[in-house]
Each structure stands twice: as C-alpha cells, then as structure tokens.
Length: 205
Length: 205
Image (cartoon, rainbow over all chains, first blue to last red; front, top):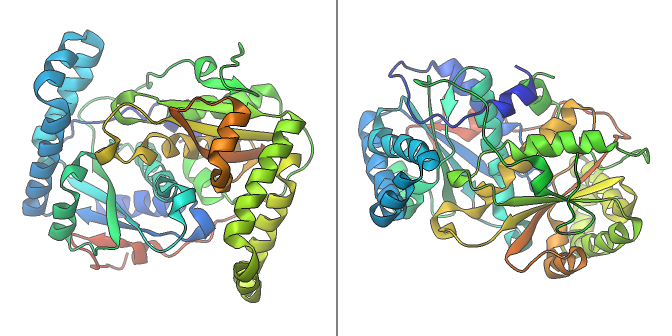
C-alpha cells in the first residue's frame, strides 16, 4: 500500500472481529515498528505481545479505570451532547469495556535510563515506532488505535507483565481485524496548522 | 512508494544539497503529518516552516550549543574511537555545524495545556505526526532527520519564532534534497525486541 494512502485512511479502529491474528502478521507490524528512528539509534524499546485471556482481562480492568477517570461522569454527559463527538465517544467506550476481547494487545515499552532525556523529549524515542506499527498494520488490513489510558495504573501493568523498573509502558495498541471500515481521517485543514517563518503566519496553499 | 519500503529505507539524512524545496512539496509532507492520530483527535500541533537565512542562522547556533553540550568533549573522543559510531558521529557533527544551510527547517510545536498529560504521555500527541512527516518526505525523495538538540535553548527558540508560552517546540526536522543516498536502516533483529506474553520471553520467528 502507498505510504500516503495508509496515512490518509488510518482511521482509529475500536471495534474488532474475534478472528485471530497470525503470528507472521504480528512479526511484520513489529518489524516495521523497529525500523523507526530513535536518538543515536539507541532503539530503547521492547514490544510486548499479549494474547493470554487472563492477562488481557487484567489489563482491560486497568484500562477501564483510566477511561472512567478521564471520560466518565460529567465528561461523559458533555461528550454525548455533541453529535460529532458522541460517535467517537461511544466507540471509545465500547473499546474500554471490551479491550480483553481484542485478539492482540501490543504494549510499547521505553527504557527510561540513562541518557539525556531532559532535553531530548523521551516520547521521541518511542512514538515514531508506534506510528510505524499503526501504518504497517493498516497496510495489512489490520486495525489499531493508539492508546495510553492504561497508564493510570502503569506500575500495576508493569508488575503484571514483569517489566523492570527502568522501563516504562508508553502505549497500548489493540490489534485485530476491523469490524468497522477504514476510511479517510478527519483533520483540520493543513493551512490552519502550518506557519511560515513566524508563529501565526498562515498562507493559503 | 510502498509504506514498508519507505520505513525500511528511511535512513537519517544529515547532508543536503543546497537546491530549494518547492512549497508544494512542503505542503505535501506537512499535510501527511497532520493525518496522524492524537488523543481525542485534539491535533494540538503547529508546524513552523523556516527558510529565512537569519532565523536559520540563530537556530543553528542554539542547535550547535546542544550538540556541543551532549556530544562534544569526552563524548566526542569516545564516539570517534568506535568505527561503527564514528561515521554517524561525523555526519551528525556536520549537520550541527551546517544546520543553517539546510533549505528548510520544520519545527513541530505541541500545545502543553490543558488536558490530562499526566497519564497520557504528551509525546504521543506529536511524534506520530513527525514520523508521518519523515515518511512522506522519504516517499518524495526528500531527506530528513528527527532532532531535538535545539531544546537546550528551547525558550530562546520560542522567543525567536514568537511561539506562545503554552506551546513547546518538540522537534526540529531539517528538510532538503539528500546529498547522500537513502538506504536500508540498521536495527536490532526484531526477535530481540519483541516479548511474548511476559517481559523477556523471546521467540524465534
């Protein structure tokens, strides 16, 4: 698949078919992830592939806790009143309550020591790889969504999976065959978010 | 270009031809950047395109300061003794001393307020877009490299470009026609960085 087509149709998938994902495809998307850049080519990442039902169940509980904390209660009512956001809200709510049923959960881990993260923004070491993962999955017809809500119980997730203290779980990516279609992503017009020479200086294309 | 081919040949480019980059190609790579996911589809990003020689000169000074701080002195001697690292070191050193000569500098900015960044790792809001930018540039034959060294003088860079206090410059991406070839990236074997079910549980492919 063309690289731009993959990007332009990489809709977040939050509803999945129960069909299993073959190992060979898991390897493919993860090998693509490892081709990403990282500062000094340090590759300070590990990717955990979780398919065990009990492990997924417990991760799902942590994830739901994060979902409820940030998107439950008042936020819920507010989101559901906006028709444009209500559709996404319901889909994200569905994922939060059914995470354990997604065939594969991939957890992207980052080593937290020992280099100058003070200036080099540690997210730069892991999210390019995560984006490669999402794009490669899209090219294979597999659905994904980039999530971080499990991090409200990050320490417990690490304990569950045996992740050492000097590593951190930065993202959780559900992976499976989509039960909803891919399609064009909705974004702001590029002219609104690109400035030329100085902040605020927009141009028409 | 095929999405996997773009990823597998996305070698960091640190030497550029002086030839200008047409606006239309800058728009293309930045539109691709904006197609990336971000939590709640917030798109809390702006991309600054800098071609003004004086602005590039000053950014180049800040960048060189970061380079010298982290890779000058003792680090320099150490890196140059390792043949595998010496080549990359010299190329990164060249970039640090010639940044102002790169035709285009793109600065990816992230809004730092107001959502729950405590759990959601703010890097997840900007580096997927930066990776899209790099991949789209690769597909067009344009070279890039993901850098963050300007951040040793992040406040001064913001002042120079008029970036408001509630935004941060997260990455600096030089963009231009490569003076060196693209080619296969060198990474650890995927089998070494993928664990199955639990930390440390590797498998052969």
